[in-house]
Image: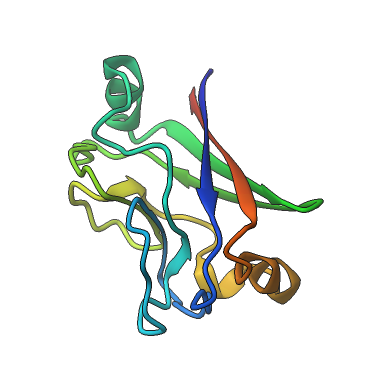
Amino acid sequence: MRTVDFHAYGHPNIVGEHKTTLEITTEAELTSQGTCIIGVRTTQTLRDLDDEIKTLAKFARTQIQLTMKAEGLVERIMGRGSPGLTYSDPISMVARTSSFECGRTVMVEADKVASDLSRDFIQKLRDPDIVIKCQLSYAKR
């Protein structure tokens, strides 16, 4: 198993209502139209992940988990890798319920997205000073 730890931060415009994706971005600003974005100013990009993790992400049998913690609340999203995941994006990482692949896709067939997160968790993420402790885990099955 390989893991990578990083942080993201809250923003007053986080709404967490998107029904098919969840996104964490390096961008500092967010409009209320970004309904999938649940964290800004992330300290990690997909492009900067090491080659071993990028290789693991290309296997459909690799289980990918994103764990997020904020002030005692924890959310976990489970998905899988896919041969078309390139991890080339320098700005965003997106978990998707679908099998759509692009440079921003961190996992496909995710079991949760923005709208599935607890409303208490989303409420905490609306604080711009909140630190979201994140961990990506990769386990090849």
